[in-house]
Structure formats: C-alpha cells, structure tokens
Amino acid sequence: MTKWIDLPPVWLCLFLVLTWLQATRLPFGGDLGAGALGDLIGGLLVGGGLVLMVLAFVEMRRAKTTVIPHMTPHALVTTGIFRRTRNPIYLGDALILTGLAFRWDAWPSLVLVPLFVWVITDRFILSEEARLQEQFGASFERYTEETRRWV
Image (cartoon, rainbow, N blue to C red; front, side, top):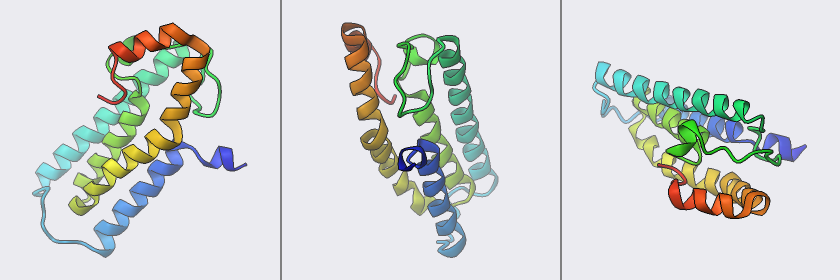
C-alpha cells in the first residue's frame, strides 16, 4: 500500500501545500512577482510544465510502456521530448512548483524547488535508472551519455 502512496504526484502535492501555506500563512510581502508579471511568469512555467508532461505521456503511450515509477518499463523511450531530458514529467513537476510559487508570490518557497528535485531524484529517478540499466544495458548507457537527467 505504501508503494502506491509514495508517488511523485503525492510529493508534488505536499510541496505545493507547503508553498501555499507559506504564501497564505507566512507572507513576506516582498511582491517579488510584481503582480501581473508574477502571474505571467508563473503561468508560463506551469504551462510549460504541463506541456512537458503531456509530450512525455504521448511518447510513453506510443511506446506502450508504463508511466508509473514503481513498475518495470517495457521500452526505453528516447524519442520526442525524451531526446532533450530523461525525466520530462519530473521536470514538468518542478516547473509547476516553481510557477505556482511565483503565482502565489511565495518567493521564500523557491528554496523548496531544489529540495523537491533532490527528493524526486533520490526516491524515484535513481531506482528507475537502475531498472532501465538492468533491462536495457548498453542502450540505456548510451542514452545517459547523450541526454541529461534533468535539463
């Protein structure tokens, strides 16, 4: 049961709740986003994150493989958005977190973004990469040499 609760969207929601709580309960009044500019930057980041996620889902669906981190993939996806980043869905999550911090004028919560990246890398990416290495060997090794983990 814990395995199915320990999913990246749950972690993203936790970090979003912390960001929102900081924005609403501990506002610093710095207006770093400068109102409309913060909304624009936040919207672009959230939108970009959603686009990355959709592009990744489409590629994974096309390859008939899973998007669930704890499951063994049936294919090594290296096409489409996966040519630019090995983890476009997680990158999309990080962009959404960053964008909503701007949108909510929660600039102190931007320190949560690298923490989120570390948690996702530690809890999901490293084990996913180990499974991919075991299953796809030299093909995965070449892919890691050509494509960065995040950006």
